[in-house]
Image 1 (tube, rainbow, N blue to C red):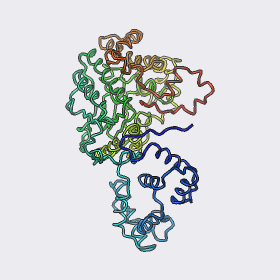
Image 2 (cartoon, one colour; image 1 turned 90 degrees about the vertical axis):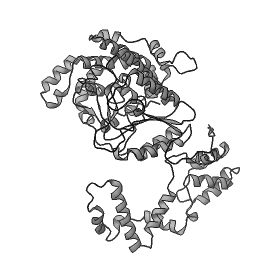
Image 3 (cartoon, rainbow, N blue to C red; image 1 turned 180 degrees about the vertical axis):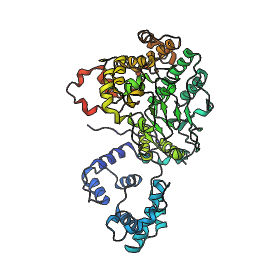
Length: 532
């Protein structure tokens, strides 16, 4: 069935042309066929109504150029890039100079030295080539922004917009420093001020929003703080403001991309703020301590309950994390848990942020896809996770906790019998017992109900209640959560229930498991939970 390609404001081509070009693109061309031959064949035999000149113009904007249109210098550069240096006589003998004094040098510096060594060898032994001219050619021919839909918005200048990588007039940047000073806490008043900024980000003038901390992007040796803790006083008021902020962020992320650039410590009590989106970019300085013995855990024990309950990881992983007193989640663990979209080095964060947010100049409905492709380009390997290596222990001791086939006390006895250092790092106190029980209950809940459980149980906990049964029974009415969030008064506004907070497949499975009785669930077991 033919699917129309919607026209986008600012596009240089009509809807009919884009449909023709898409038909050209998906045609099974032979790899040896030149672009000129393909265009001629397409216009003569596939779609005679297509304009060959317009098709060629589109291909140029997409970076597809026929070899006959390339200059002689460009053809030299192409031969250089395709040259087999691995088997070039004598080339390996020149590599000593490339790696000499490379201690402390990053991959980009070593790569630049390697390229220069190849160019010098090629010019001396294969054919003449000007390395400086080659660098200039690369700079000129490189695509400007990291955006797969560049042809849809290249004529932004015609509408008076300029895109220079600074300012980001299409991105609402929410800087935490504007709301809370370093070392302070998130009070109800602070979070309500942040909510106002989130509401402003809904303006059609913005294609995306970014949550950043200019204090955390400073290039210094101190470990920065990205998100401070919630205020431990006036817990009922604090939790209501926290609920409002979380729901506002999820609503925003439903309407347009919300990107979080987290470099620094995130207090466990405020984790729900960054869990409002899957588009989280971290650095090596990112950390969050979810241990049950921390000060925040003893005031806000169920932070991020719904996301932990619906974690797209092997059964028992959430229990392992939330009962571990020694495990601090860093970028590697965050990525392994499927909670982030990329990792960049802290020293490169400002530049990477510029390039990623530049992709947000791509208009809807393509903005989110353009940003996610930019994450891939900018991301580095986060390093090995300290969770995956304990897969066998998680399956043996913590998976039964998740399935309610054993109790917290039973697991505590089993681990005590292990008599190993790793087994001694788990605490099964009242916080852990509440977390395990709440996870079991929240796994069968939609987002609004889990948020109501988190709200009610936390307020009751702050008042001194320690009975797990009583805390779970103290869950707030989901209708009151919608009222707090301002989602139920206006029928035209999405209710809290309608805000997606998990993988769509998981939603469908939870609502009707029988629909998938003939599906191989192991094939989708690792499906990443996306807050789309």
